[in-house]
Image (tube, rainbow, N blue to C red; front, side, top):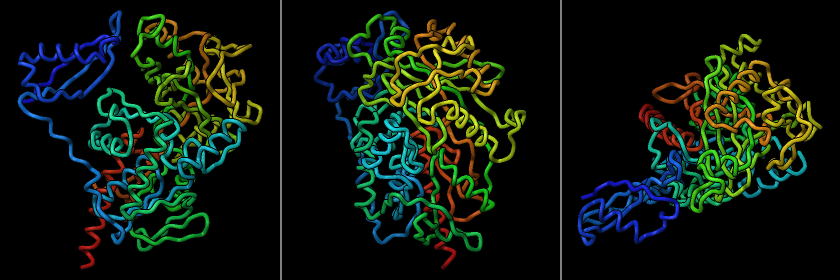
Length: 525
């Protein structure tokens, strides 16, 4: 028999094994000798009362032992001589599509425009220290995709896409900490992700798949409305019948390629705004009601939202104990993002602070057609860059100054390594964006008093929240309606919004590729 129970523990109790055992015995009301196993299934923090408590959910195995979950790894097939599937992009959608191919008995051939996860670090240093942007190797492009060096948050509401537990277990099998299986908002950290991603690549290669780095795809070949192959920037040509296209939300060249090929794309709603940075102590005091965070409590996070003019204004990708990083993918633009290391021990807390931008709304401001959202995104990023000093210094204001529409004479300390430059963000942003963010801050400060403070900076611009374009695919086959064998996938194609949802979409698409190749084989015979 398995009994599920919940315990509420104060921070100084969560590692007290004797106390926890006593509470469990009291709760299940059976002699302790009958308890064979105790498995912690979920852990979260409830900070609504004066003193925060941990909510711990356990499965108690009475008169029986827990059955270990089966390993996914043991089901990977040797695919050296199996049918090839091309995958463009090595982010979570691409790599988890590759792992799913191993389960289906297909040989994944992965093409990544950027560098492997270790070599990529040099280009991140170049953009941080010297303001030099490598268009193919940066915080968005390279092995592991945008999530590698921007935190590794593993939280999603997109349960319909697939089994979250399968992705989490695969990550653990490749070196992620077991904590991600139990935390309510799991997180790995940008210092640990590189080894996990390298391990996934090794699994793919050990089972017969291939991963090519610095192989930028510049053309996709077709014949009789079927996928025929692809061409890389170095002139190399590869022939094949199926391609999973998961190039991420910033691969603008792929959007233009699709348009030039006549494949259907459409502008989609997205969100744009700024990144707000408080001290972590400030956020801890808001959330935990304590001057000093109690030992064992994690760096506090938050999620805020307000409705302004029938549009959402909300926090996005909140990074407790984190850093603000430069996320531009081309020279001449400023884009910021956030990340945390596994310990989340930076003295700063940052979050995107953005507002929804609809395609219909953009028409009123002169943006139309398939590239309406993209063109708008580009225009804001370039305006931010043009204000500055021709570097990756980001324009910023103190938060209350931003609301009051005055330039800040000085700025607060920041985690943003390239540095900040005092700027009139209230003028640099499109007026309709500024007005909504301003009202959003005023409304949110009513709920979280002190959020709107000149002790915090607000930094421009947070513009890569999601893809501004959707590459259309059939609802049932997940294949492009314009080219047999082409499968748009993941965040860049407009079908995911984060590591977990992208990984699950990659798995789902790989399964559909298997169905397609089987039907093609049946048709040949």
